[in-house]
Image (cartoon, rainbow, N blue to C red; front, top):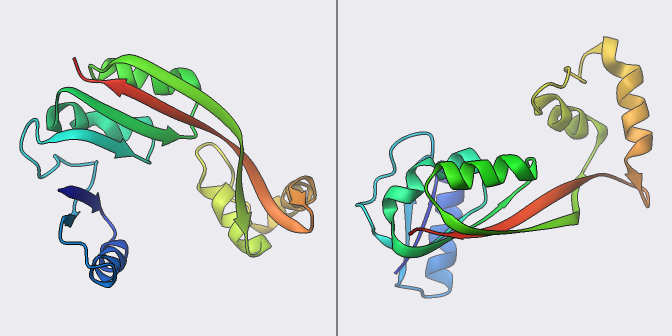
Length: 160
């Protein structure tokens, strides 16, 4: 059984539609958030894939069986990823760094909103930050598209 969970009802709805379209009965979607206790019994899973930041793996050690594997893809600092993996009791961590990920933005407003939502950044949608935003727009123009290059870390670890 493949189980996916998300805290977006819209994404879960899309998942259910795709499940029906492809006639997949061995797939289940569950509404859940990593900010709360996950609604799965202990040692339920052999394999976990997590696409969120390393702090989202807080419940994963409980729901992964002993000997199970966890994979993740994150964009935070490499040492922070390794620290969270170890802090949550995982061992044999392997991590690869990729610097080819691009986030493409449809317009300058979405770009400004994205940057503003990043921890430690000012609100680039405000008039007083217009000059800095314009500079960032020029610096992040890639072949006529507004894009940010992001580091990604793909990692794997095991529960002892």
